[in-house]
Amino acid sequence: MPNQLFFAPRKLFIPGPSEVGPEILRALSTPQIGHRSAEFMELYSRLVPKLKDFLHTKGNLYLSTSSATGIMEGAVRNLVAKRCLNLTCGAFSERWHTITVANGKAADKLGVEWGKAILPGMVEDALASGKYDALTLVHNETSTGVMNPLSEIAGVLKRHKDVTFIVDAVSSMAVVDMDVDALGIDLVLAGTQKGFGLPAGLAVFTVSPRALEKAKTVPNRGYYFDILEFEKYHQRNQTPATPAIPLLFALEKRLEMIEAQGREAWFARHRIMAERTRGWAKKHFALFPEPGYESISLTAVTNTRKVSVADLNKALGNRGMTISNGYGKLKELTFRIGHMGDLAVADLEGLLKSIEEILKL
Image (cartoon, rainbow, N blue to C red; front, top):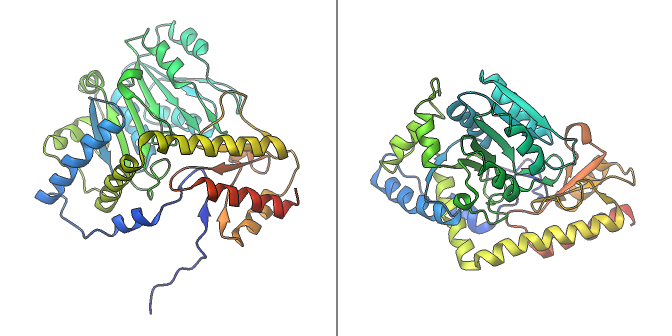
């Protein structure tokens, strides 16, 4: 019996996974190679320098066949020796606190109301206590549509050099230009299913030289996410465990596509889509994040009209597209429109027009 799709494909305007274009899908079909073969080592040795250049880092960069959540866990297991400060402003940053505690690490949560941003003054006050040797920050909180002020918070961390700076850039990497070394980030991680516009299943993370040295002093790092194992195999142009090889071919293709398009044009498209969606939301509804901290990756819209988001999404599905309901306690109170991956401005315009027609706005 031939394989068949059991659903009608829909264009994804959600916080992730993001829309994957045909060129990436073709790259995924590259014939398989052995993960310990010379061909793989050649692929790895091409890909890692391209990624380091893209992220503006001379530090270490590793590839993990896992969700980004795996690297969130690995980061605290490897880099928290004394006590961790988890900055929280939504569901996914709160999850990092849960992960930290679940791994037996001493940790405190410094949180703000959902929809608010983490501000540098708060971080300065907390770190002045001298209690912490590590800090976690979610740059872009997809549950609330808040993009935290990474550069300003990085400035605080530069005054506290004994604190390891760990950043979740899951939904901001490849959406905004990120200079890892200039920001002084010790470990930054992302999954490929968001800004990179690839399928899920691959995580990318950088590690500073000082963080690598710190990991050597931390016991019980585990195995699958042990940074030192990644480094050992990196020296051979390999990964510790069997990688998702098709995703590596796809990631290399994505970087080639970005270079061909031009980095500024790539990042500008995301800014244009974000600004267009915000303007539309202000006209017909309201924005959920506090002003000045709106995400570029997605727009969280306050459901001021009290429409049924579930019904709206069902109607959009009949038109071959989908958005995302609010997350967790924000379900039906907000809805989220993603503008990442291979989405174009014309795609976004089609979505917004469809919502207007369905809701008779």
